[in-house]
Image 1 (spheres, rainbow, N blue to C red):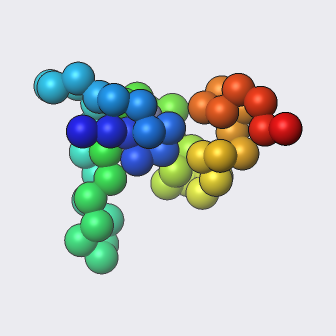
Image 2 (tube, rainbow, N blue to C red):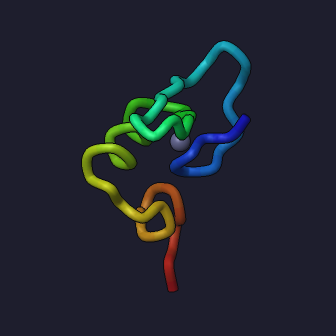
Length: 55
Ligand SMILES: [Zn+2]
């Protein structure tokens, strides 16, 4: 499975699963990704650390 935020491959047994109220399941490789997706509602493509350069 892949991280819902940075699209990085997550190893089995690692990462975290989040189920939204609408039933949609999100998977994250690390808490940083979870925070960005859920709290900051950032667009993954605009994050410097997940997409090195946006130009
Ligand atoms: Zn991630």
